[in-house]
Length: 410
Image 1 (cartoon, one colour):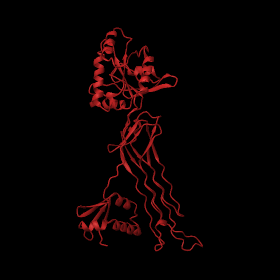
Image 2 (cartoon, helix red, strand yellow; image 1 turned 90 degrees about the horizontal axis):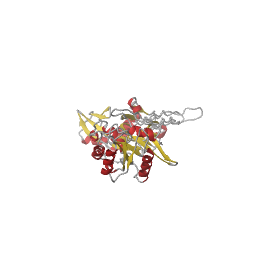
Image 3 (tube, rainbow, N blue to C red; image 1 turned 180 degrees about the vertical axis):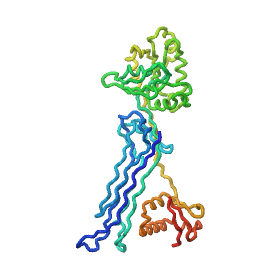
Image 4 (cartoon, rainbow, N blue to C red; image 1 turned 120 degrees about the vertical axis):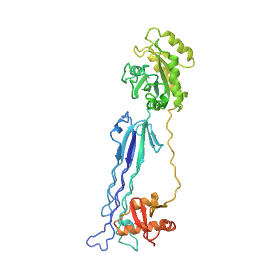
């Protein structure tokens, strides 16, 4: 799921002067603009899916307010808090910004721009009445990719119609959709299983696997990405006489191994389901003979037989299972890059650089004093010299961002 976020722009500073009776030469009196609002993603346990983002994908934080006279600072823009389900992985450009695995955990994905400075800041001993102020700094904008990976202690896996949803409804208070057709479960369902006083766990009913799921067949990765979080896998296998439970288990384990992400090494419990049907003894015996190294629980989601033992077995497995696997958050990488670069563009020259473009965005181009200050900054940064070395002649067009200037020899 992709969304677009943009933080608030900083408020413009004010150029104003103090004009009061009995206050000679009052001087500059313009206040600073307020900062723009941040965009924050916060995990909320009350949410279960990312479905709301299908209808709204653009989010913008409020801008900061402009500065006022009497050196008053403009109001700060409120932070925009976007609620997401617990277990949401946030990516930008392929890099993981955050793995929001805890209720209330948050990450600031776009910082609001700082407010522009009022003309009070530009007064000096030789320039006591500056008539310029800064504009607010633009906010940050980016496209984010949100992916929900379910947070559950144990997950029910298996082929479609193995009885996973029925088992979840009998073990917990969850009421997933149950039907006698493939892919009854289209989204994961969670339930809390209480084993005894003080002992319990979160159990997930996950959509059924089919052959080729690791490559996207059936529900493909919509299923498998949720399995990555679980610490114990409960493999539900249908032992009805018309099924081959050993082959069914092998097929699902093959898909887990092909998908990778450490799923093949996760602790597994086998739940031999539908033992209420006649003629299951042979299949159950074959299953026990093939998987002697695993706990196998004979259960019936229909009658409830064996479910107490299964719940206790899951709790025991969880007690010795490793912690859940979390997405490694990409470390902040500081790139060493030039302050600016000058390249030819048509009959003119293009100046690129984050610092140069920020100075331009915060300059009031309708104010001669502000423009003169911007030119001084460019001269000190070495932009004029770089243009001259690149071959710029008097009057040559110079492009910075969306603005065009004429090169003038100083």
